[in-house]
Length: 559
Image 1 (cartoon, rainbow, N blue to C red):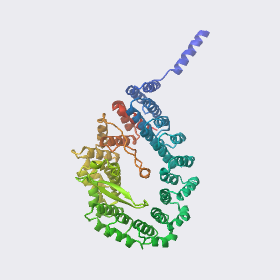
Image 2 (cartoon, one colour):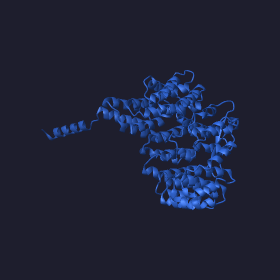
Image 3 (cartoon, one colour):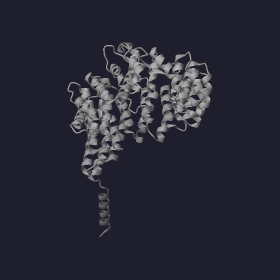
Image 4 (cartoon, rainbow, N blue to C red):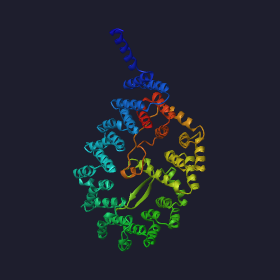
């Protein structure tokens, strides 16, 4: 055989070796088309790949998702940019951090905060670097939010960064910092907290004392005991609270003396501190103040066993403020006699009530006030409708601890009166309950033809509970019919202390938007072949604006 023939054979062999298989060709085409932003064609080629191999290729889906998000973050369309940030955040992928970094550099502080919300969830060195970068933002809100996430993570540089920010700001901002150092809890943070307890500003001292108590830092007790002899009312109230919270029985004599203070808030706080230490000598005075219609005392009885009868009388009062505080206290004691007033709080009527908290001077006591004509007074800075809704949702969550029959009666009334702003929380509670009565009520709600929101949420709950029936098909059909719906919008951020107790995303309470994202999340969390197929279909044929966020969910389902 001649040399030329041998060369030709070798060349043919090499070509055969490097020739792409149909699967490889489909994979390369899918990735190339996604690079060209031809999303529908890219997914079609990916489907060919899945048909050839007989399975989904998670790595290819991750690459396709990251490519689409990289394209989306370069878009000049603000909505596409925002949805891309959501997609990057929902993906929960460290590879998407470079996209979230673009949001962190955006000139809009709201966009920066959105990016920070997702960056803070990542356990990754690069995420920590970005939090440190955010501490140099032009916007104070961004720097404070970054400080909060650094404190949550107990980052090694958190104390230095946060202390530096505190000293650069005007003194009026200083009371916002003790919660951050308390969250960190390291030796360096403890040293700063000790200095803040001795600060010249009484508001800083009060906040520091309260944070020490909330974090259970009994190593601060020697420092706190000295403060029981102070005359500053707010600081004395905070110190009384901390003695009870930290279970310091050595100060019982002082607390007994303070329970007879001429200042009502100190009397109440000292009585509660004694109660936490097992001493009920302050309870009669507390009950007497409650009978005299002191709202702080009424609310405080929620911590006092055997006060149910007093509260049951107060819950019948003509004064609405007395009724709602007595009802919340009874709920805390798991007494079903609170139910009629809770219903009054849950069901909106002609009075258009909003609810907001107000605290004592030392911020250890809280009572609730009902404000009528809330919509007409929406410009009043003392009325926050989103906070009022959050309060009602919290009360509804707590209502599940009542006897089941009483809770289900409240649930039936909310459904019957179509109180739609509470439906997402209520259906979630029924889903968590998982009793025969709860499932029966969900099935009844799923059959309500005249109440689409209730019907749709009940179907979603029954689907998540894997109850036999047409629920999965209904949810997926409903989702595919929302092609034109906007998937995600921002809602106002709650303060740090309330966000620590929640794990949901900061989404709008708007009915269709919230239900749609919950539906997609439920489908993505299944992490099976059917759910992946469905998400691909929704990206391919749904609202083009939504595809960035949906791709993030697909990445999350295939990580």
